[in-house]
Structures are given as C-alpha cells and as structure tokens.
Length: 110
Ligand SMILES: [Zn+2]
Image (cartoon, rainbow, N blue to C red; front, side):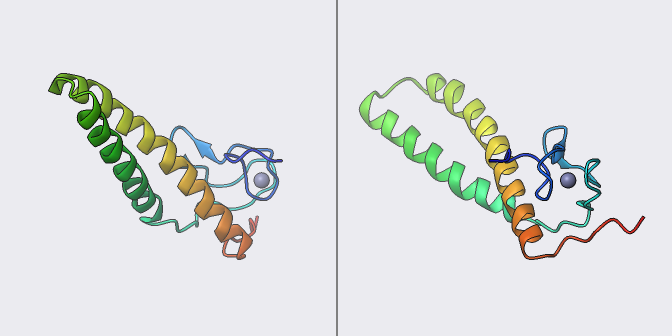
C-alpha cells in the first residue's frame, strides 16, 4: 500500500512541500501536479467535517461536564486548527488522486 501523501502515480516522492503546498512536478516520475484543480473542495470538506465534529464534541462536553469557558477555548480552538490542517491535507491528496485516476493531470512535456 502506498503512502497517502505521496505522488499518485509512482508513490515514491512526497506530494506536498511544506504543510499544504503541492509540488509542481513529481521529482521521481515527472507527473505535472501544478495543474491540479482541487479548488475549494478540500476547504469545503474540512469545514464540513471538522465543523460538525468539533461542534458536536463541544456541545456534548458542555452537556456532560459543563466546564468553564476557558477549558472550551483552550481545548477546541487548537484542536480545530490541527484537525483542519489534517483534513485539508487528506482532502487535497484525495482530490488530486481522483484527478489522476480520471486522467486530468498531464505528463511532463520536457
Ligand atoms: Zn511520481
């Protein structure tokens, strides 16, 4: 099984440089990744999924434990940021893999 955060064709080179920036061209196989068009798709999935989970968990915690407000702020704000970065990477990788499967990414012309 190939790593989820590697090139969709060869699986040898990393798909991201940094946290969320996709590499322009795969250094291992030459697949051009700069033309991918994930658009707002990853942000949509991150907002939908993380928003639901964090809101549900915070509401459940308030209902069961009723902690002071600073506990909610100290827990849910950093957790929301971390979860958004993780879901953004996953969704971006997933959408780029779908584009590759549908042959929407081009070969490197060289
Ligand atoms: Zn590759």
